[in-house]
Every structure is written in C-alpha cells, then in structure tokens.
Amino acid sequence: MTLVWGTAQHAPGTGPRTHVFIVGVGRYRHLLGGASPTPGAPPLGQLTSPPISARALARWFTSPKFANAHAPLGSLEMLLSDSTGQIFDGVQVDDATSDKIQTAFDAWKQRCHADPGNIAFFYFCGHGLQKDVVALLPEDFAASENNLWKHSIDFDKTYVGMVRCRAGTQFFVVDACRELSQTAIKDEEFGGTALISPRLGDSHLRTAPKLFATALGRQAFGDSNGVSRLTGALIECLDGLGATDDGPEWVINTTQLGIAVQSLVRHQNEVLKIPENNRQIVDPAGGDLANGPQRLLVFPAGSSPTVIVKFGCNPSSIAEKVTFFAVPENGPKLPAPNPGPWITTVSAGLYVFGCSFNLAAGPSDVPAPRVFVRPPIYHTQINVPPPHPV
Image (cartoon, helix red, strand yellow):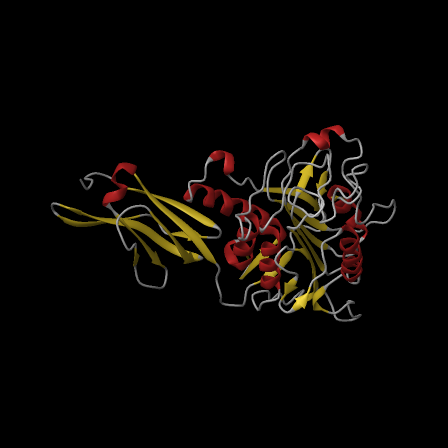
C-alpha cells in the first residue's frame, strides 16, 4: 500500500473525513506489449493515460481546491503501474498488482469505516471488461493461462460489499472500458474476486453513486500520454462545473456530479466534432441513495462556480452576422470578441444575453429575458425578429 497523503488510521474523535482510493494501471505484464504476454489473454495492450489520470485526480484532492469543512481530506491511498516510473510528488508508489490493491483497499476501507460521516471515494483507471459483471484488470491480470481471471477485480460484488462500510457517503468512479471480449464470452469464471465480499446482516445505509466512463459494451477513451476524457471532465466538474446551489451555498453533491460530468463530456464531443464511433458516452449509473444527496464539497461563502454558455440565434442563418453579448446583474456588458457563434464561461448568476448587429438604419441590439444560469452548461438561442442583417 502507498499512503501518499494523510495518516494510516482515522484518528478517533476527529470527525468526518474524506478518504480517497486511487488506482491507475497502464503497465500490464501479461497483455500485448508486456514483459510476459499470456497466450489466450484478451487482446488488450499497454496504456499511457491511466497513471497520468490517476496523478491528476490525486493532485486535485491534495490541492487547496478541495476544501470541504464537513469532511476535509483525511487520507489518499494510491497505486500505479506506470512504465515511466512510480513516483507521485516525491513518493515511491506501489505497483497496482492484485495483492497490493487488496492490501491498500483493506486499509482504506478501515479508515472509511471509522466514522459514519466519512466520505469514501473510489477511483480505478485502466483496462476493464464487462460480461455479467464489470471486471477491473490490475497489472498482473492473466498471470496464468489456466486461470485468466484469478487476478481481476469483480467491481459489482465489491460495490455491494462496501455496504459493510459505515461511511454514509461513498462515490465510485470506474474509468475503464465495458466491452465484452471473445475470451470473456468463453470463460465461465469471468469476473475475478471482490475486494470486499457481501455479508448477510452486515450492512449500513449509504448514498453511493457510480460513475462509469462509458456505457455497457463500449470503449472508454484516454488520449495517449494525456488525462482521460472522463477524468478530465470529472476534475473540471469538481472545480465548479458540477456545482449546484443549495440554499445560499454552492456545493458539489453526489446527485449532480455524475450528471454534470456526462453533460460536459457530451458538450466536448460536439465542440471537438469527435466522430460518432470515437465519442465518449459517460454513464452515471445510479446506485444506493438511501441517505439522499450528500455534499462532497462546499464553495467558500460569496464565491460562485463557472458556467459554460453556448450562444446561438434563430434564424441560425444569420449567426455569422451577429455579435453575442452577456450582461451580468452587476457588471458591464461582455461582448464576444468576434461575430459568429460564441462559447464562453461566466460566473453563475443572473444575466441578460443577446446579440448586436448592424442594419442600414444603424446598429441594433436584441436582448433576451433575464435568466439565472447554473453549471455546467447553459445553451441560449436568441430570437432575432426581422429586419435581419444581410
């Protein structure tokens, strides 16, 4: 196990804490391109994005950006399998093998279990497959040709088993593919072993959403040597694009976060014009919600998160002839730098949006009704009555 932040135990009497478990697997010994490929293993290769993505998420949690007065960061457990090195912020991190993942998970679960107010945050990035269950693949997956799935993790059973943990808020992120390989179809023992097995009579109420990088039967994408699309969007939403207003405060909560990540990735697919067969399809797959929406992060008093605003107009044929603008409730008019469709970010709040253009009789402004915009994305269509610019 590698504890890269915090202490090995949740100290009694310290109150609720957030305990984070992060696994990023890019180096696979027994898959294509590995040190010792196993005959008959699924045709999967080496990855560069998972260790980078895991580090990026860990840096976010250990930065000043994570400031939750109710459950501040208590610990961060990390494992990496990275062909470029095992260092995170000067700490040598253990390989993400099945036995080391189990040891680290046990220690993390014990800390999470110490207080019912704790937040348990689970993150895995690497290869995954799905048949009847989701199988997560550690570095030593497929070590034996005769028992390929011995060193794989049954995520579904692990998720159910975590009901034994007293942490009333749990959040599970699986940044992995959910395809079905021919090998998985043939093998009766698909799925591997749970990190914690369910036990009758040993359960606690929890709110425990699941966030998958992709839908059943589809790939997840991580650009080579970069942060994965899901993890990048998750960090942006934790930064503010996933916020919701809860009374006078802005918060990141368990209900909104996954939906916001899904919306942001869909927006990125469109803006980047990613081909249909290469689009990320994020799945906020629900989960146990017995404790209702729970706060993961609270914004400082007086601060507001950002919102992505996409401007268009009706009729769309004149979009290249108009200059869009935003007028905040207390502030000057913010015009687009150029005519044409505009995507920008603003602070959440009240705005009047509109567009300006020139006619023979002189300049004209067309405002829309004032609206309150919330994260992550607000799409506005400005209705422009005749006469139109030509």
